[in-house]
Every structure is written in C-alpha cells, then in structure tokens.
Image 1 (cartoon, rainbow, N blue to C red):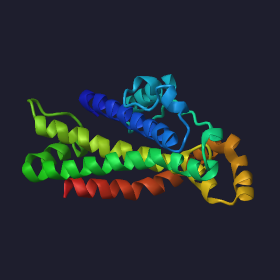
Image 2 (cartoon, rainbow, N blue to C red):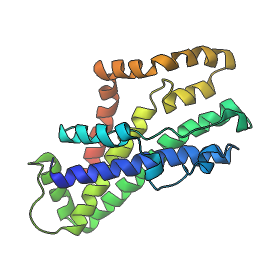
Image 3 (tube, rainbow, N blue to C red):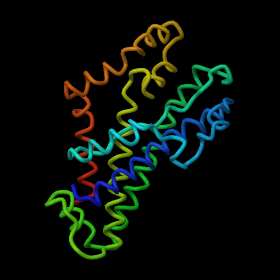
Length: 226
C-alpha cells in the first residue's frame, strides 16, 4: 500500500467512525436522551469522538502492517432513563451507527460507478493501484484520486457496519438483538456482555468473520472493476 493510500484510508476511517458515533447520538436525542448532544457528540467534527487507541494507534499499526484500516471511537453515552421505551428505542439507537455507515458506503459506490461512466481511466487506475503494484503512478489525476477515496469509503464503511452488526453485546448487533428479545430472554442474553470482546476475538481467530466479509468484498470489487 502506497503512502498516499495509507493516508487516505486513515482519513476515511476517521470519517466513518465519526459518522457512526454521531448517528448513535443523533438517534438517542430523537428518542428523548440528549446526553450525547449535551456533550457535543452529535457532530461530524472527529475530535470529540477520538479514542487514542481505537482511532489512532490501532488503525495506524494495521495499515502499516498491510491490513485494511479499522478501529473505533469513544462510545456515545446513552442514558436509558431518558428514553420513552428503553428497550425498543435502544434497538434503533444501536442500529443507527451501522445504518449510517452502510448509507455512506452506498452513496460512495454510486458516486464511484458514476466516475467510471464519465472516465474510462478510473477502472484502469484503481486496478493498477489496488490489484497491481500498490503504488500510485506519477502525475496528477484528480478524478482517479477521488475514485480512490470513494473506494476506501465503500470498503471501510462496509467493514465497520458488518463488524458492529455482530450480534454480541456490547456491539451494536447485540443491542439490536436485546431490543428484539422478550425482556427475560434479553436479560439472560445481556450476561454475555463481559465476555463480548473475547467472543469477537474467537470469531476472528476461527475465520468466521472473514467468511461473512469475503462475499461482500467480492461484490464490491466486482461492481468496481467490471
């Protein structure tokens, strides 16, 4: 991965996690909890969302090691006592982050396909950078550069949404499941929360997460390169 690609992917990740957390806070405010809003977390300014490890250190180490940029921001605080229907409302608050990321990924994909239509060089450029040597050709290519940004916007926002939809608390997918289950079953399911991180690590180690993400990657690459 070239230096320019590393910088682009890191900035796209910063935007993706900012959109993700801001969506949680905005949705919580719509359902009656202004906690995140009062703390300045319903904003597209990334500074209030930055977590030193999840937003800075981990993504940097991953891209330097040749892996896709990935990370997290500071969780948006939600006070369930302010919600009118805590369990049902929390379902939508949890889902808001992944929905926001998938919306950004969809818009970026549509924009990228449009660039391919108006410039035949876009696909060739992306193919050379992403499937070839990984280095950028010399010269200034504004449309192709925009296409590269859009590509990472599609990929990283999709990664972030899929990861967070893993149905294990405290991830967003766990929050969605807790909102769908009957109260008694939800209380039992929530007991997984202290072990959630270990469960996710186990899924990654066993390759289960890759089994889920790989078909999505194939679809994305197919839409971009053909």
